[in-house]
View 1 (cartoon, rainbow, N blue to C red):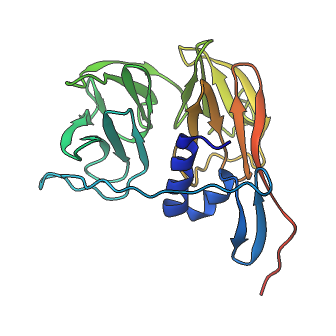
View 2 (view 1 turned 30 degrees about the horizontal axis):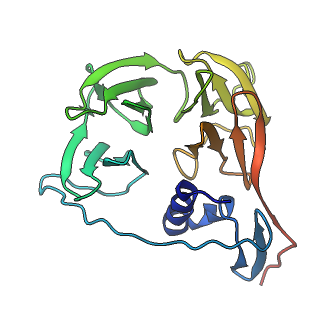
Length: 253
């Protein structure tokens, strides 16, 4: 059964990155003339579209949005490439602007290239691609800066409840680095790598597609790559396949 979060994920993928929509649905339909089967054959879902009008102040310019998430109270929007790069917070019920978390710079609580963010129980963690650190902020009313931690070369991560593990995609491609040929890295709470999982289809440091192809459902991390039409689930011990795309064939015009 597809849960509400995955319905929302599918909806955003369908709208924003059509090329990755095939990774996370459980329906069967025609896409550019190719009969494609998602997940369980014969299972259909309904995708309901909802709109929230955001009250964006005149001095803020929101361009390309790279990540969207909410915690039931606030809506978080990340844009990475512009002078206004950062995480913007809006009231989820009214659309009113709350604040921007942190600022661009190299001082305490500042970031240069905000690659992605992760929501925990009471924190929001922003990955800075320039300093290779995770900047942490409270998710209370003031979103105050709490501290940072070095992470190494990762662009996103999610935590797995129950054992303190963190899971991230693996950007490294240098053959002398540990687990360079694995798609995903399993880390402890200090971002020390303890394992690598799933062989890479392509060993490359280039990043394409969504900056954060990961989410959490029922305490388990779900991840996918930009090159393989599979969604994996990490339960704290093993990485298993949740959805796999298959099709009979295709032909060029």
